[in-house]
Image 1 (tube, helix red, strand yellow):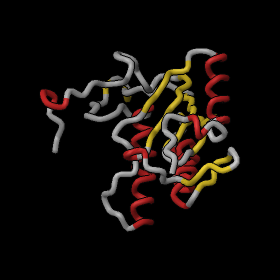
Image 2 (cartoon, one colour):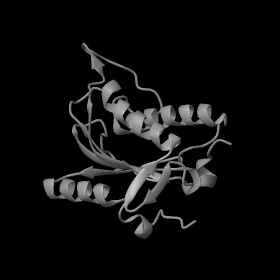
Image 3 (tube, one colour):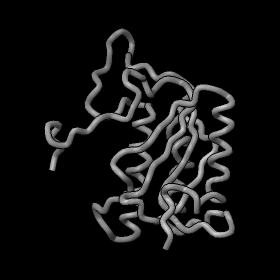
Length: 177
């Protein structure tokens, strides 16, 4: 069923008016559909990826290979979510010569939204092929992003990502089995 704005009242969680294709540092969190633990387990403060988690890790590494404007920083695959810091290192211009290129619905090309959409799609396609579950949801509909604005903030988020497996039982996304 298509979203009806008068019924569903969805609001954007993005910073209004911000261009997410601008160079800068971004912290991203993407959760699994219904927070189901699909990617492995945490034991002794370390994340142990299963086959699905390996797909997530491999696709994340491919992100910087196929998207030249993206540099990867700290990241971690957790049982039911993913955290990563990315840098957009060059500004993409929607103009070719002196004629603007028409942008269609969806995320702006070479933006954080386009990167996340491509990543989620690639993971979903491979996971569903591996599990023989065509059209099954792997990810939640949206994702969380945060624009990193300072070196101390970047340092703190890197530390948060590194320590995420050690703090798994304290995480709000933790589900005791």
